[in-house]
Image 1: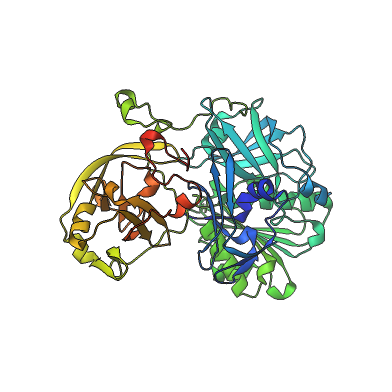
Image 2: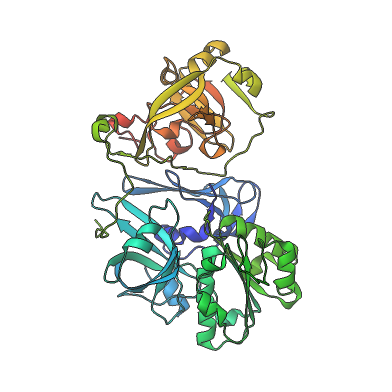
Amino acid sequence: MEAVDGNAIGGLLVEVFGTEMTGAATVCGNCGDARPVAGLAVYLRAPGTIVRCRTCDSVLMAFVTVRDRMCVDLLGLAVLG
Amino acid sequence: MAGTALRRRLIWQVAKVSAVTTETASVRTLTLDVPDWPGHQAGQHLDIRLTDEDGYVAERSYSIASAPGEPVAITVERLEDGEVSPYLTDELRAGDDLELRGPIGGYFTWEPEDGGPLLLLAGGSGVVPLRSILRYRERTGSAVPVRLLYSSRTLDDVIYRAELDQPARGVEVIHALTRHQPPGWAGYARRVDAALLGEVAWPAAEMPLAYVCGPTSFVEAVSQALVQSGYPPERVKTERFGATGGT
Amino acid sequence: MSPVSRGFHRRRQDPGENAGRIPPGQYLTKDFPVLSAGPTPHTALDRWSFSVGRGGQQKTWSWAEFRALPSQDVTVDIHCVTKWSKLDTSWQGVSVDTLLDLAGHDGPFALAHCDGGYTTNVPVADLTGGKAWVAYAYDGQPLEPEHGGPARLLVPHLYFWKSAKWVRSLELRDTNDPGFWENYGYHIYGDPWREQRYAGD
């Protein structure tokens, strides 16, 4: 299943952060890869939305909607913004 | 104006389909009448949301095909076994409601002051946001030189074909037909590779700005080849559509 | 609720006389959707191995050794937490009972580890008694990578996120520690008949 990229979650990120984020800088907490959110690997077809580093595949962000609440995990990022 | 659009709250609203245009056998452009549309930038997209009678919801994102200032339009390719795209291409008609939110995106956008020369690389339906850029360039009278390299399976799969056959001044359109070519075809007849890019792309020394859009595998191969040829990564903007049959 | 989109409906099959086999909140599909939280691993069979155990006490099989173990053909219904159910799916694999017997271990809990880093937790009692397999064929063909090949865990009585794709080991543990989706709020057990999708259900 091919990943899309951070452009595909532009709307989700506005919901979560209140602002446009696809151009925001990220640094992977595992390997240090640096690229804008738009360049990250995004997996939409799963029980949640998973965003991974394009170099080392570490999970950088996870968005899971449980009933009417969204769980947001950004622990894989060293830098966002 | 761009800054205002980015800070405005993103809300779901109900638009009306004002027209459905056939582009190819599997592709339709939906022109939309959006009551509270704040305007958009070339390259942005919108999210649409479909709800069935049981409350099941499906959401998808589609690039905006029209330029800022034109009525909002999206171009949708019917994916075999798709859940949403066949509804949009085959069922929806003028007068129907369509719930959407937008515009979305601030990275894969182009304004005339971003300059060029521009290298636009389209794989299949990846041409949609690039067409918005081309139309906006023309509306603003920008003289930035543009080359559009557009990969399709066959000539019948080329979206906006009539429009692209009459490009504006300063725009070159180069087609690559990967699966089948008409008799007498003198253009590229293979998938875009590093050698083909080498013949088409602006030299890195001219400080071009590249926009690559299409299936993930196309975007990966093309963007890597550009960076290897000397384009700085920050001057190669990418938008991956996932796996489709488009190239 | 959002306005209904005229003429839009999810692709579903009418279960007809099989309605009783569809758990609450699920719909029947003839497709086999591919859901994934990461890139599809492609592990060469000559580098593949499968282990069962805890700590330094592991029983490990190479692909050739694994394929030489007694296998079963099973036909089961499967239920994904994203609400699709598929009936009468046929698989071939090694029963987890066989693997645990050969490894000489028991639970009480197991954490499945997979290529790509995915994990999921299952009580050993739900992996034994003929309830679970490590499957390497689907519908008479070698299991495709996008569906979890070379081999995946198959635990059909629980939501299908527990049937971990690309499984490489079952780590036996004393505590029922949550795996990948369980950590994000999915149910620790996941019984489709009690609709245990999320923690607290």
